[in-house]
Image (cartoon, rainbow, N blue to C red; front, side, top):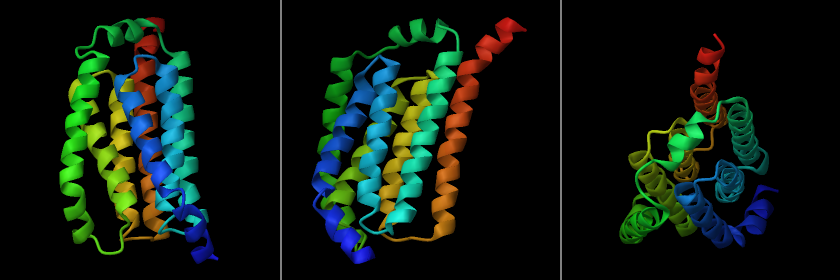
Length: 204
């Protein structure tokens, strides 16, 4: 049954990599929080596809559900927060063009090291290497360009998703899957607190 699932999802591995690249670039370059969180939800669908190449379907679905729950927590937090951080977001340094050019440099680095990483990790598919490294690279770039709470959390979730894709090729323990899901939700709750706390201080 697991083998059949692997064969069914293997054909979607390359589209999943393309989806991960598109969504990570959207999160990096867009200044609209709705687009960013929608892209995050699609990003978790791509992560689920690549993780399911090595994990059973039900175990890989934990990653998808936890990611969507984290995104829902962030949506509720944004809707409950004040509008001051939105104005700060538009004054952050680095326009969309600059961020896309920086992402191009990340893609060049990923292309150069992906074959070596694939040799270091026996059993990993090349699509998983590409997807994992793209998310890690774009996520770290995102963290280096902003200090806004929502974007920091999005960058951390992106980096963690890339790590999980690569880690899924070497470990499929249920406890690890649950722990990583908990880390995703913890990051989302932390980001929600940082977004809502200014409103709580004003109300106090």
